[in-house]
Length: 464
Image (cartoon, rainbow, N blue to C red; front, side, top):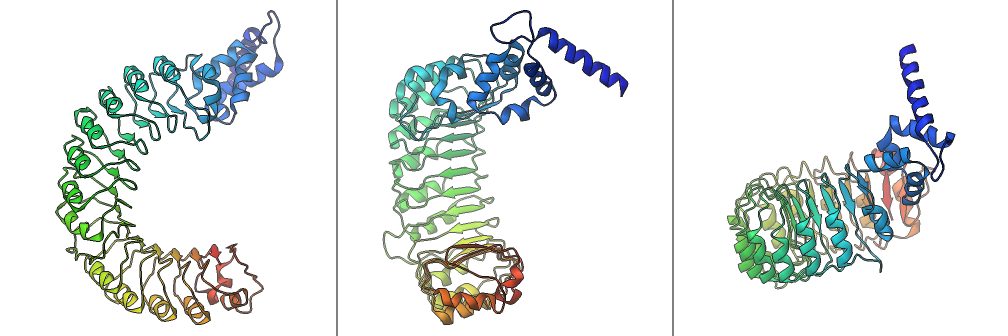
């Protein structure tokens, strides 16, 4: 103990002798000395709590504190966009994450991109330049940077053309595993250049909100990404059943997440996915694809044995479609979204009676035209792990409301009944004789035993 005190005293004395206020000589600043001692003990956590203004002031206080800031800052966020000089003006050998995403009028220029690329950040592994309106010239600067450890590159919302993407594909980022090119106006010809990129460890690709078509899929499946796990194609892209069929041919055996929401297709395209070799698929979003009224295909049992979540919201499914859906068998499914579909009592019978949902934790049945008869079937189902139930935007009369509270859901934590036409006077049936008062909106529940006669002991939130 005494030896530790002596070492601390020597370190303190060293700080006293070397620390000087900015712009002065021969004196020391006790406040700066104390800060230096704190930063010597826990530099990372302390600096991480400071704002840009505080860090700049700290750097200007003394050479010793400036060295601490230079050495230990590992992450810089979007608030620094207004002061690029401070970001690139110092050597930052430990910098790993740089986020210059912007939502306002202040954006980076091509010259700014050049300055970023010329900075010495050998450990940089994450770069976000989202929504900066950068064009093809910026791509030339980015690929010239020495970032051998770069893993995440987010260029979403910028303005690269085919020429810019061609340059970007030459980037020497051997461990890149997350590339985000969403909302860039890309077309099939631009995607063709990605086939030449040497990113063998790419695991996530986001090309959502572009203008991709079946031709783009033909290029994508030629890319050599043997460990790809996540592909996002949702919104604004337009894929027919032919494009979905091409997608199913891709050699991505480790794919776990596929987002095809609102891609201008219909549920018949699901039949094309049956040929895909994706044994580890965990999540698929095919919501809002109802361009034509077609039957939901029967999927062979065990098609995706690891599937945890499926989103079929807004696909115009009816009772017959639900009957085909459950034939696929989903023994470990945890999340099922069917909002904005047309579910009557017959659909609910197929959903509840013809399939076991032992593992389902989240069930979204919002805006599905449920009535009291359908609700009665729902609550008779076996949902032992249900935690989140959304019944909002259904017109629930008093009879339906009384059926809801009969649900035996011991793990339920959140129930959404908002915009369901329930009157304030009807809320009392949820709490019986309890002193708990419920109001419209979100109600935090401290004691779930006060709700539904104690059937939901874990409940924490009730939306009315």
